[in-house]
Image (cartoon, each protein chain N blue to C red):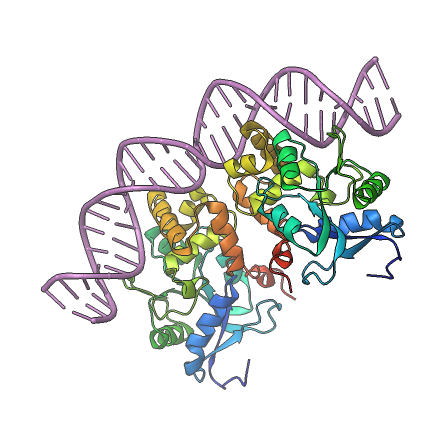
Length: 221
Length: 221
DNA sequence: CAAGGTAACCCACCTAGGGGGGTGTAGCAC
DNA sequence: GTGCTACACCCCCCTAGGTGGGTTACCTTG
């Protein structure tokens, strides 16, 4: 990262997909005097202590709170903030129980996100209100340029990881029929007629995780 | 390719999988004074005229005779020989109707293969007798080192190309139940529990075609 | 304001795919 | 010979996955 602004909040983006990480980083770029993305090179072990670890929930076992727990227990991150589009009550409750310092919506625009991060940094616990608006300005995700929505991409990512419908249901907190609807929709968009073909499309379009986000937070240096 | 032996038969190996091509080439290496693999760099267009194009049927639309037709029509190959493990009567008949100069079994060992190629080169039409022995000494195929049999690999390759069971049946001239048996067997061997996971295993283990074998035979220079 | 997109959900229906067993052949190794 | 494996085939059974229709609600855009 280029010259760290003195006094700026340092943030580590935690996500398995480089596109997503880069997307959020780009979104925050204009505010680099207030928020600096310190940990972008996600394949390197965590070197320094950051002010905030921003855990992006894209295509991730959202019910798997181990990862968030790992972050919270890790002294390299002073605060831990969830950054998600999913506001299922169970998820919000779980995150708060774990002790996250923020639960921020992907519907926030860059300015709002920066403000929320500053509040968290100041010691506040910030919980976004459930969104119900689109994530048009919330970074990037694989498949976006091909016309897939955030949700569709998320589900395709899970499928491309070899997950079954039942697993996708468990991970997204959606209903089985809803998951099926999304799958059908995305099949049409990417022009395939089976799950295996969708997986192949996925691996060719960056839907395989580029790394395991949490690895370098486990057993630090 | 190293120094071409004068008088040796030149052979082009036609297959989508580099491992397979390399495997056959290695098998023929000891006989380089009699048979020289001239077209190994499969991503290059066909430069010269070869004596024989050896069409390896691994994981290929075997019913799709367009490819063989393309070879036969191409002046860069003096003779066209099928090299296959599949001796379904329809396939043999089809190949002969198309006018192939040989239909050779993968069960042949290197010496036998060389002799057969020499016979073809001399003007004979050589049709191997149905094998009913294993292909232990017939080159290489993806997944071999992981303990998959030739058939299992072939079917996994087709699945990894996004084919349905019905398509695999059509392509291999096997019965639906047989295909299912193989699939179940290979799931156990590679330790997966769904088709999508098998596809992912496949892409990670070289089951995606490295190129389209027939491309450089179409519309030559 | 209407139209269009997105999100979340619902139902009934059907078949492809996967799980469990089984048969017989042949060749290879001991 | 006995055992082992590869190959090819068979049966029944069941559920995951895929298809074709919906609904409601919200927000954005023309």
